[in-house]
Image (cartoon, rainbow, N blue to C red; front, side, top):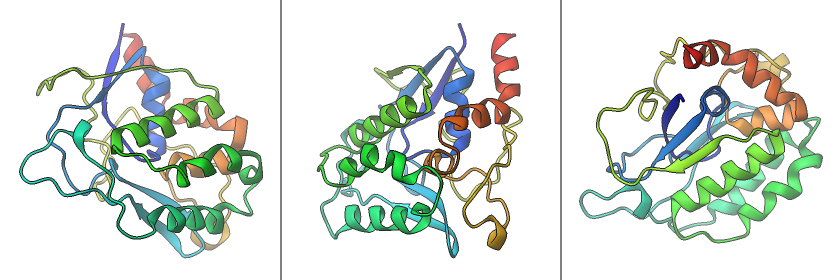
Length: 213
């Protein structure tokens, strides 16, 4: 059985969901020392003005803190801002109205821990895409693991992953910005709906081949 190790992620990018499709089992890291400026608390969406960053504010721990203990900050109105950004970016997409009621509750309910929020979102998105990864959380931290993508999939870093080859699909603002690869999974969901699973399989086919060897 092939197992991939991933960080938790807020509305993770397409690359991340390709791994959920490609491997037999998934371990989401919960015991690492929480690093800053990663997809753990941020995502990228394709807006009218190009790529837009959405970041979930977290309470800054004093010293090192495992990801499982990171709390969401209640400072500001980030839930309202994030939801309005999603409405603005994807309100005209083919499947936004179809899925909005599944995602809107996440921007009304207050989750205490970032890990719980991210994982509840992931479970919902997987159900909407009809993918069923076998996911468990780590019970301790291991520095060396097979198929380790915990730090490979992150914003601001060139994609160096020969198991991921983003397959272009329809995007609302493609005529203005061209195709923007590896956006948040909601970009694929709202634009492609049930066909999103096929895009994931086409984008990660080498990962599946590698996992089978």
